Structures are given as structure tokens and as C-alpha cells.
Length: 427
Image (cartoon, rainbow, N blue to C red; front, top):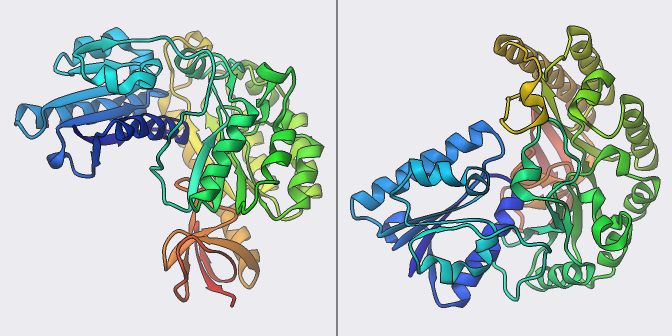
């Protein structure tokens, strides 16, 4: 069978696509890179928020259209949309040949031989498959250390899509990382719904520090990048380790969501504004060149103008290198669904205002960047990212002269506008 894969959503979902695609390749199937060349289209969907649901449905409709035209023979759909809306997807798209859950991805080859819905429960534990392929550039990879979430934030659908928090055993992570390094990966991004909770279910307490220490001992390791940390679990010990080595990019992604205590409480976040500030101050003091990325939700139920103004002041004060702004969207099944909602026009106005606040922050950061020397990784001969930029998420840089793809090198910033910079590689 020749299959064409469409993988939607976050890096966590992409690692699932890598795993089940590798299982198919190991059984002799062939991945192709144009739907016209495929026997079957496989869509690994996202279902986290409404916009992701609509994107997934658009891709399903397009695949079904190709099937009706005789261009492909079969359409298979899996992922978070299936996990969240099993019956609805089957009813809305009866033309789908195979509808299978995340749990059924472990038996993907056998599942795709059949027609119908195969809705296995989520696996109770994570393990390292005997084979894995990469759907990213060859020099960078995502390493999923855990899946699911126990935080139960009031706006979030992840717990009932991905289940409770489940850590991958440390020895499996170390083997997976060593294999990545062996195959030429220079940048490994550690991912989970909450990376800083790693190990709580297996070892009785967070074990991210110990995991990082062991990963650093892998021979030939390029750089590690820490994604999706939670502010109350980013410890002084983790910050000190980051500061002590150039093997961990001085970067951390901490989804803060808000700063005003009344909003954080309604969101069921597990820290208050004071804790957030203490964590960020500690990081900036311990790792002076730390690059901070975060996300904020505006228009959450009950957010007052006072709450929003506090968020604006906070963004101006802490100067995040990269920041996402999301208008709150009401998701069925979450605790916030039944709260009194804020008008859409207010949410949209606040989102634009916060983006404008961040734009002024970036202007200030850019003025400081001109003439400085930063560590850079080349995603191609003429473009790449600084250590401040995660793959597929943050900004990019262009090079004043070509370099070898995958190289990690020092470069001088000669131009900076918005999230795009130009650097001159230092020989």
C-alpha cells in the first residue's frame, strides 16, 4: 500500500504520526508525498479547539472528494478529533473507510486492512516502539516524554482527549534520544502536555531534572530544548542546570495563560500571579540570557478590564521573546463552558491590544539584539533559527552567507524586524 499522510495539530500529535508511519513502513508499505500517488490517505487529526476541528473536517472532505474522483481508493482518519467526537465523526463522514482511535494506532497495519470504526482505549503507559521515522527536518526532532494531563485547567479539553498523565520510562527516553543523535539529530525538543511533571506517575515526584542530567551524558548530543513547562514546577535546580551547560538551549516555553489572580483561579491554574513572577525572576537571575516563550488567553469568562490591563502591564514588564495570544473559545465538556461568557467583540479587541503590546516589546528587544552574537541552528543553507526560536513555532533568521544545513554556530545580528532577523555567521 502507498499512503499519503496528513498530520495536523501540535508536535505531540506529530510524534504519534511518526510512530504509526514507521510501523507501516516496517511492514513494507510506502509513504508518498502527493495524494495523487497514494492508494490511501491517512489523516491524523487535532481536536483541541474549534478551529482545529474545522481544519480537520476540511481535510477529511478534501480526501473524500479525491476518493469519489477515483484518485485514491481509501480514506482513514485517526487522532484527537476521533478521540473526542467518535460517534459524530462517523455519522458526519460515512465515506471514511477506517476510523481509528489513538489507542488503535499501535496496531495500525492490521487496523487499516479493515473497514469501520476501531476505537481502542488509550494505552495505560507509553513505551518506545522498536522503530520510528522522522517527519521533521533531519537535524531536529521532537521527543515526547509523556502524554495526557492531570492539571484539569477549566478551559482545556486535553484530559478527556489524551487521558491522565503518563510518563515514558526514563530508560526508553534515553534510548530514543541516543538513536536520534546516532541518526544526525542536532536539536532535540522535549515535549509533553506538561514536561515539568515528567515522572510523577512513575517515580512519585517530578523527575525532569534527573532526566536532563542523564540526557546530557549522551555522547554526541547537540542541544536540548525544553517545551511546555509549568511555572510552579520550574525549579531553581532546573534553572541552574540550564545555566551550567551549553547543551541545553537557554530557552523555555512556559504557558502562563494569564497573570491576574481572579482569572487564574477561575482557570483552575495551580499557581497565582506572585508565583509566576517569582519563577520568571528566578529564571532571569539564574540564566541572564534565558529566552522565554509563553501563551496567553484573553476574554476568559469573568475577565474584567482591570484583569486585562494587569496582563498588558505584565507583558510590557517581562518582555517575552515569543508569545502567542488566543481568544478564549468555549469548549463543550470543560468547566468554563457553563461560566458567564464575554462578548466576542470584547475578546477580539483585547487580543488585538495584547498583540500590539507585544509588538512594542519586540521592537525594544530588536534594538538590543543588533550587534549581539547569538547561537544559531541552520534549517537550510540560507535560513534557520536562533536559540530563542523553537522549530515550527517561533521566529526565523536569514543568513548573510550560506552555511551547512544542521550546523549550530555563532552569528552576529545585523538586522532585526519583528520576529525576522538577519545574522552574519562568525567563522
